[in-house]
Length: 203
Image (cartoon, rainbow, N blue to C red; front, side):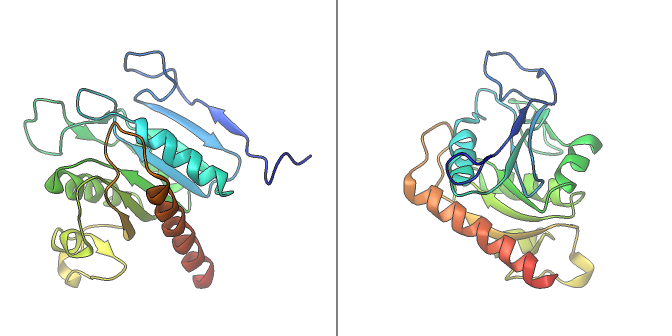
Protein backbone atom coordinates (compact mmCIF):
# COMPACT_ATOMS: atom_id res chain seq x y z
CA UNK A 1 0.00 0.00 0.00
CA UNK A 2 1.33 3.46 -0.93
CA UNK A 3 0.41 6.76 0.73
CA UNK A 4 1.33 9.97 -1.08
CA UNK A 5 4.68 9.51 -2.89
CA UNK A 6 6.37 7.01 -0.60
CA UNK A 7 5.48 5.45 2.73
CA UNK A 8 8.10 5.72 5.47
CA UNK A 9 7.80 3.77 8.69
CA UNK A 10 9.82 5.24 11.57
CA UNK A 11 10.34 3.36 14.83
CA UNK A 12 10.33 5.95 17.66
CA UNK A 13 12.47 5.25 19.69
CA UNK A 14 15.33 2.98 20.71
CA UNK A 15 15.31 4.30 24.30
CA UNK A 16 13.27 6.43 26.67
CA UNK A 17 16.00 9.04 26.78
CA UNK A 18 18.21 10.25 29.59
CA UNK A 19 17.52 13.96 29.40
CA UNK A 20 14.59 15.93 30.75
CA UNK A 21 11.68 17.13 28.71
CA UNK A 22 8.56 15.69 27.15
CA UNK A 23 9.79 15.58 23.58
CA UNK A 24 10.85 12.39 21.85
CA UNK A 25 14.23 13.71 20.68
CA UNK A 26 15.98 13.32 24.00
CA UNK A 27 19.59 12.36 24.49
CA UNK A 28 20.48 8.73 24.09
CA UNK A 29 17.60 7.95 21.72
CA UNK A 30 17.38 6.53 18.21
CA UNK A 31 14.44 6.54 15.81
CA UNK A 32 15.07 4.12 12.98
CA UNK A 33 13.43 4.18 9.57
CA UNK A 34 12.62 1.13 7.46
CA UNK A 35 15.66 1.38 5.18
CA UNK A 36 19.10 2.24 6.54
CA UNK A 37 20.01 4.96 4.04
CA UNK A 38 20.69 8.15 6.03
CA UNK A 39 21.14 8.80 9.74
CA UNK A 40 20.88 12.31 11.18
CA UNK A 41 23.22 12.66 14.17
CA UNK A 42 22.23 15.36 16.67
CA UNK A 43 24.05 16.69 19.70
CA UNK A 44 22.39 16.23 23.11
CA UNK A 45 19.86 18.88 24.10
CA UNK A 46 21.14 21.36 26.67
CA UNK A 47 21.48 25.06 27.32
CA UNK A 48 23.42 25.59 24.10
CA UNK A 49 22.63 22.49 22.05
CA UNK A 50 19.01 22.59 20.95
CA UNK A 51 17.92 19.94 18.48
CA UNK A 52 15.06 21.94 16.92
CA UNK A 53 16.60 22.24 13.42
CA UNK A 54 17.20 18.48 13.30
CA UNK A 55 13.47 17.72 13.22
CA UNK A 56 12.96 20.17 10.35
CA UNK A 57 15.99 18.86 8.49
CA UNK A 58 14.72 15.31 8.91
CA UNK A 59 11.23 16.23 7.74
CA UNK A 60 12.67 18.04 4.72
CA UNK A 61 14.67 14.96 3.70
CA UNK A 62 11.75 12.58 4.25
CA UNK A 63 9.51 14.82 2.15
CA UNK A 64 11.97 14.25 -0.71
CA UNK A 65 11.70 10.47 -0.23
CA UNK A 66 15.02 10.09 1.61
CA UNK A 67 14.83 7.42 4.32
CA UNK A 68 16.21 9.05 7.49
CA UNK A 69 16.87 7.68 10.97
CA UNK A 70 17.63 10.11 13.84
CA UNK A 71 20.23 9.54 16.57
CA UNK A 72 20.53 11.97 19.49
CA UNK A 73 23.88 11.33 21.18
CA UNK A 74 23.99 10.53 24.89
CA UNK A 75 26.79 13.07 25.57
CA UNK A 76 26.74 15.52 22.72
CA UNK A 77 27.41 18.91 24.28
CA UNK A 78 30.80 20.51 24.86
CA UNK A 79 33.87 19.44 22.92
CA UNK A 80 36.23 16.44 23.25
CA UNK A 81 39.14 16.66 25.69
CA UNK A 82 38.32 20.10 27.08
CA UNK A 83 36.79 21.27 30.32
CA UNK A 84 33.60 22.82 28.99
CA UNK A 85 31.04 24.27 31.34
CA UNK A 86 28.21 22.97 29.18
CA UNK A 87 29.29 19.33 29.46
CA UNK A 88 31.49 16.95 27.53
CA UNK A 89 31.08 15.51 24.05
CA UNK A 90 31.48 11.81 23.47
CA UNK A 91 30.26 8.92 21.37
CA UNK A 92 29.99 5.33 22.53
CA UNK A 93 30.45 2.03 20.64
CA UNK A 94 26.70 1.41 20.39
CA UNK A 95 26.18 4.80 18.74
CA UNK A 96 29.05 4.11 16.33
CA UNK A 97 27.43 0.79 15.41
CA UNK A 98 24.10 2.54 14.82
CA UNK A 99 25.77 5.08 12.51
CA UNK A 100 27.71 2.40 10.63
CA UNK A 101 24.49 0.58 9.74
CA UNK A 102 23.63 3.49 7.45
CA UNK A 103 25.02 4.60 4.11
CA UNK A 104 25.34 8.34 4.90
CA UNK A 105 25.51 10.36 8.13
CA UNK A 106 24.14 13.90 8.40
CA UNK A 107 25.98 15.41 11.38
CA UNK A 108 24.38 18.51 12.91
CA UNK A 109 26.68 20.72 15.01
CA UNK A 110 26.83 24.34 16.12
CA UNK A 111 28.49 27.73 15.77
CA UNK A 112 32.08 27.36 17.04
CA UNK A 113 34.47 26.30 14.29
CA UNK A 114 36.83 24.33 16.52
CA UNK A 115 33.93 22.46 18.13
CA UNK A 116 32.37 21.64 14.75
CA UNK A 117 35.63 20.24 13.39
CA UNK A 118 36.54 18.28 16.51
CA UNK A 119 33.09 16.75 16.95
CA UNK A 120 32.89 15.63 13.33
CA UNK A 121 36.43 14.29 13.59
CA UNK A 122 35.59 12.34 16.78
CA UNK A 123 32.60 10.72 15.08
CA UNK A 124 34.38 9.89 11.82
CA UNK A 125 37.41 8.48 13.60
CA UNK A 126 35.20 5.48 14.39
CA UNK A 127 32.30 5.68 11.93
CA UNK A 128 33.34 4.60 8.44
CA UNK A 129 30.58 6.39 6.55
CA UNK A 130 30.50 9.41 4.22
CA UNK A 131 29.13 12.46 6.03
CA UNK A 132 27.23 15.65 5.28
CA UNK A 133 28.04 18.29 7.92
CA UNK A 134 25.32 20.76 8.90
CA UNK A 135 26.36 23.71 11.06
CA UNK A 136 25.77 27.40 11.72
CA UNK A 137 29.29 28.78 11.26
CA UNK A 138 30.92 28.71 7.80
CA UNK A 139 33.54 25.94 7.59
CA UNK A 140 35.29 24.47 4.58
CA UNK A 141 36.99 21.23 3.57
CA UNK A 142 40.41 22.65 4.44
CA UNK A 143 39.35 23.17 8.07
CA UNK A 144 38.61 19.45 8.33
CA UNK A 145 41.63 18.30 6.33
CA UNK A 146 43.97 20.29 8.59
CA UNK A 147 42.57 18.30 11.53
CA UNK A 148 43.24 14.98 9.81
CA UNK A 149 39.68 14.43 8.54
CA UNK A 150 39.30 12.88 5.09
CA UNK A 151 37.18 15.05 2.78
CA UNK A 152 35.86 14.87 -0.75
CA UNK A 153 37.90 17.81 -2.05
CA UNK A 154 40.92 18.24 0.24
CA UNK A 155 42.97 15.25 1.36
CA UNK A 156 45.28 15.37 4.37
CA UNK A 157 48.77 13.94 4.06
CA UNK A 158 48.55 10.15 4.21
CA UNK A 159 50.37 10.08 7.55
CA UNK A 160 47.99 12.70 8.97
CA UNK A 161 44.70 10.94 8.17
CA UNK A 162 42.88 10.17 11.41
CA UNK A 163 39.38 9.22 10.24
CA UNK A 164 37.67 6.23 8.71
CA UNK A 165 34.75 8.30 7.45
CA UNK A 166 34.90 11.21 5.02
CA UNK A 167 33.22 14.64 4.85
CA UNK A 168 31.45 14.75 1.48
CA UNK A 169 29.38 17.95 1.69
CA UNK A 170 28.99 20.93 4.05
CA UNK A 171 25.79 22.93 4.62
CA UNK A 172 26.44 25.98 6.80
CA UNK A 173 24.11 28.78 7.90
CA UNK A 174 21.67 26.52 9.77
CA UNK A 175 21.10 28.37 13.05
CA UNK A 176 20.88 26.24 16.17
CA UNK A 177 17.52 26.51 17.95
CA UNK A 178 15.77 28.34 15.10
CA UNK A 179 13.63 27.27 12.19
CA UNK A 180 15.50 26.20 9.08
CA UNK A 181 14.83 28.08 5.85
CA UNK A 182 13.47 26.37 2.73
CA UNK A 183 16.70 27.33 0.96
CA UNK A 184 18.83 25.45 3.50
CA UNK A 185 16.50 22.44 3.43
CA UNK A 186 16.86 22.31 -0.34
CA UNK A 187 20.64 22.65 -0.03
CA UNK A 188 20.75 19.74 2.41
CA UNK A 189 18.57 17.53 0.23
CA UNK A 190 20.80 18.24 -2.76
CA UNK A 191 23.94 17.46 -0.70
CA UNK A 192 22.52 14.15 0.55
CA UNK A 193 21.30 13.06 -2.87
CA UNK A 194 24.66 13.97 -4.42
CA UNK A 195 26.44 11.87 -1.79
CA UNK A 196 24.06 8.95 -2.32
CA UNK A 197 24.61 9.09 -6.08
CA UNK A 198 28.38 9.08 -5.62
CA UNK A 199 28.04 5.91 -3.52
CA UNK A 200 25.92 4.26 -6.20
CA UNK A 201 28.52 5.13 -8.85
CA UNK A 202 31.22 3.44 -6.77
CA UNK A 203 29.28 0.17 -6.61
